[in-house]
Amino acid sequence: MVSLKIKFKSIRSESRVKKFLKIFKNLNQFFKKISPSPGNTEYDRVLVDWTLRNYTRVQSVTSTREYIYVRVKAQPRSPVIAFLRITAGVHKAYDLNVTNSVVSDNGGRGVAIDNLRSSLHIHHSEVSNNNHIAGVHVTSGAGDVNVTHSRITFNHGDGLNITYYGGHKNVSKSSLSRNEGFGFAVWLNQTTKDRAEFLPVNQTTNIEYSRIIGKF
Image (cartoon, rainbow, N blue to C red; front, top):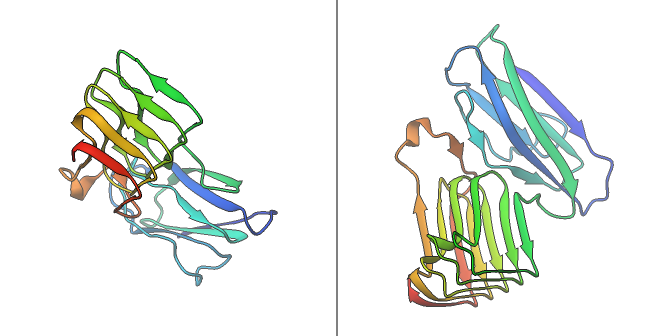
């Protein structure tokens, strides 16, 4: 068993985001468990734990505590190499943040992100009249998709198309209208459930105070 304890010198309101970039060992066999906790001992509440194979990619997790404690269990006498990225800030780290922007009239997709690991955030923006697949297109990965106070309209395909392993999906106070395909489409990749490359922490969808006009 390998344990890693990390302490942050920061204000209480900040969040710590842990992204597991790459973890592998000599043999492509399952680890027993990886358990990050928002404390400084193994007895604190576990944020999430999972088993994995080489190069399994897990959705990032967030804690508001001062410490992050990570415990890794593997086969005895087997070398393990792990790469983690840990950030501190007032909110969860973004893979892509689109705020106060206009994304329009592109020959391809408007906003596209592949292999999501943490979150996509679209706020107070307009995505319109893009000509391929979707105005906003998420392909593969696991993480959070958050669309707030935005308009996704008149795209030559879906408005918002999310095709990945899972995570939290939120659309609030937004308009998804007049798109030629679906206004809002979610497709979950479960074809490789026993040997999944990406592992989501949660699987939830929230739509509130929004307009979806057209297909859904």
